[in-house]
Image (cartoon, rainbow, N blue to C red; front, side):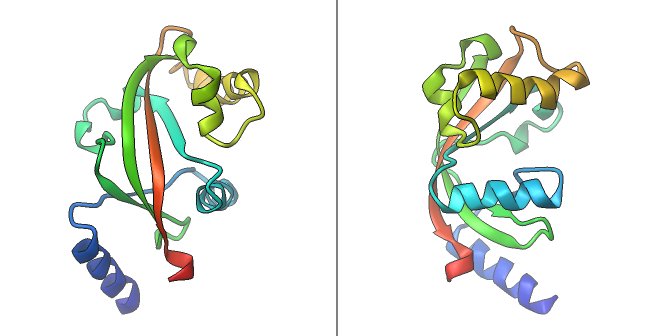
Length: 143
């Protein structure tokens, strides 16, 4: 594990203050989403505001650079947050939804979000979302 620790230290020198996070809660989905980011197809993500309550330090910050990890918690991608918006679920626009790169239209996005968060009682039309737009800075897989 020394190589991983060394590379993480190198990344902290190159990208000071970068946090690390995963885009999904299972191996397959994590790999799929990371690939969409690497291909430039996924340039946004959103979560209910309630996911950050009590851990406001985990909120994305415009201008900050962060590390997206693979399922094994290895650094995979470097992204820079361009914009962070707080928006109600019902006010997400088709353009915003398509930036997430996972759905063909806003209806598919709404269904996916409702399936993901609605079943947990965390989503209705007035739920406040944190909507983050980002850009790929570096794909560590091609380093």
